[in-house]
Amino acid sequence: MAKIQNSFEEYLKNLDLNMLFEKLSLYESEFLAREVEHFTVKEAEQRDRILINYFGDEGINRIVDRIVELLFASPMLPADAKVLDVGAGSGFFTVKIAEKVRSRLPKVSFYAMDMTPAMLLSLVKKGADVQPFIGLAENLEDSIKEARRYFDIPDEFDAVFSTLMLHHSVKPEKVFKSIRKVLKEDGKAVVVDLCEHCFEEFKTEMGDVHLGFKPEDIAKMASNAFGQVRVEKMRGICCQCSGRSAEVFLAYLYDALG
Ligand SMILES: C[S@@+](CC[C@H](N)C(=O)[O-])C[C@H]1O[C@@H](n2cnc3c(N)ncnc32)[C@H](O)[C@@H]1O
Image 1 (cartoon, rainbow, N blue to C red):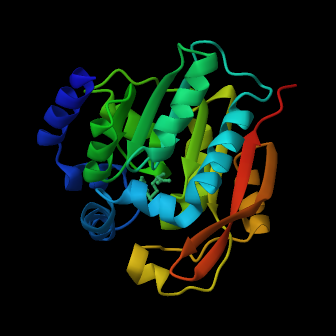
Image 2 (image 1 turned 90 degrees about the vertical axis):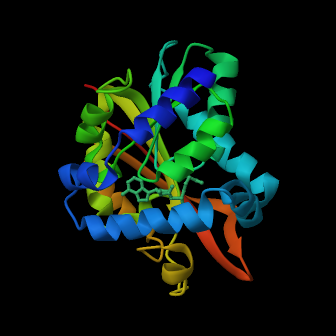
């Protein structure tokens, strides 16, 4: 894994983040720079601990197990599937999901995209066989094109998943379309995020853009990109933070092939 670490550090040295954001973005690169600063200073080193505090080990295991269950649901992943985590952060979920999937399909390749270099450096330090790259969730197609100048990354994936990234996106509806564009025809996506809550202070404390989402709004947004959309509240799983609690939804998305 030293190879991934060295080449990722080398890639970051040569990367002009502002220039990349300007190329990829549909909105203010100053806003993105502020978000990156937030995640670099407040989360990159602490993210794994933050997640354990939010959900406890049991909640984390249930989220991982449900995502893995859906990755193995029909349409089944091929033995050499390519799987992308969008907004992977420190890779806490990426690595757990990769381990579980590879215990059944050892040849599956995992990729982790995020806009914050420091978050992906925390993932790389875990030493897992996951290829990280910098990009934006709203424009995965061009993010991948840019990253392919440095890394061997497929332009289409068998599956995409994303945990707790969507409420940081200014344009969540674009994220669904962007995911669809980089999935194979029979590919699938699993998106986990917060249900609507009333904690306005999460915007300043956690850099949140949305106070979660109503499951029906997620279903509407996702339906503009996917033929089959199932949104479920994850019963009994809440994101707990200093006495405040937000429910969690999971969206399972694919297209029925005729
Ligand atoms: C709350 S963290 C979640 C990280 C990880 N998925 C997890 O569950 O711990 C949100 C992550 O999304 C990234 N992010 C936010 N907006 C993004 C965007 N528009 N494109 C790509 N990454 C984004 C941030 O850099 C951060 O690492």
